Figure 1 (spheres, rainbow, N blue to C red):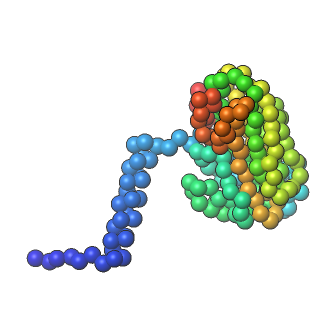
Figure 2: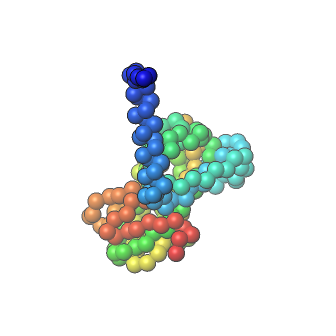
Figure 3: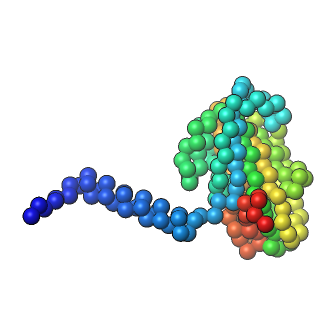
Length: 191
């Protein structure tokens, strides 16, 4: 009878293989909600501000669970890793918000370069030019019902980063994409 002895490297390999298999099955049977549709447009040439005319040379689409790209030198999301974009790109993020509780909401956009945030085609906050990582607070009264969240962001050069949170009056803040007792997120085409 042949007896197989597992080396330390083989044990690690099989452990990683089992973890990957488990995560694959988990996502197949219990898929993670990814309600944020993101389109990244690589620009041919420099981007001066949010109003720079688009000359797209590459376009990719993604779905994410949260709107969070940490500060760094390359676009990164915790669910997918590095996305291959470092400079001269536009990013558009859309999701549908179902407002469960009417009230005064504050959206906080932390960005390294400019953005424009719209709800149902109404601009509620923007910073057109480039900037180092800073926060902008955008307040609005939301009634119950569906709202289209639409954020346009640009990265010129240097460091980048984008994270958007929301809060209802003095309640805790949540990342966009995180459901709470007062907001629920869905893909744009979901009824």
